[in-house]
Image (cartoon, rainbow, N blue to C red):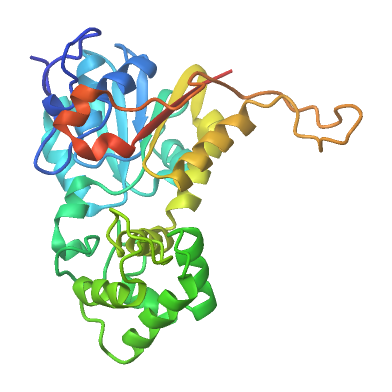
Length: 334
């Protein structure tokens, strides 16, 4: 066993997902992350989304005895969890509360740049979804919260300030709800009338408004009608897509040439940002298509290593069904 768990092996019939899982969170595609980031002794890595510390623990084990890791998370609960879990790593590890979109500044402030690898596991952690008091779940009664960290407004604060047109946009773009106007007005009407006190109240409003169609089109689906509404609200409150875009742009600024960045996304909006962002960083020219010759003098900053997104294999999906929507994309800095 390694310092923090089983040492990663290149060939293993069962994924290391459960080796680094805790009740707090189950990390996804651990083997693939370690392999693509080329984790090794003496190298330095940033885990932009520490969560329960699963990926962080795997990186420290695979890079033993001398790899160093800086982990970042917005959530004070996650910070406490990972600090306790990785206390045995000593000066090889440090954790900072912050937003991974600010990775360039955080690395500079901690004298931890450039690095050999940068990992982002976007989305909500298992703990945040499972703990009703965090307000992320539409199935359990919880407060109107949904904050990933104290740097965001609560859902109640957001609904008190948001304009109807903006809420319609959020539900349409981030939640991909067809009847966004109807749902937005119903939510605001219930909130202003003092009828929204918890997540189950919000779920009831959504169910009454959308009916059986998760996207509001009347068609029956396997997706609960509140799923996409909660997704849209969560993304808006935490500015998740802005954060992801900032992190993608920061890759060539924090990762050294030859180093790699691995990003895991969980829905089409996230994956689109990662895919297109990587493609832009890999372009040699950013001139308009109708320019006869290149005038920008730009050069590709990265090489895309995954022509298609990697997904979890059958063995991992059997262990962790939540991995089914995860997509992993990797670039190497030039």
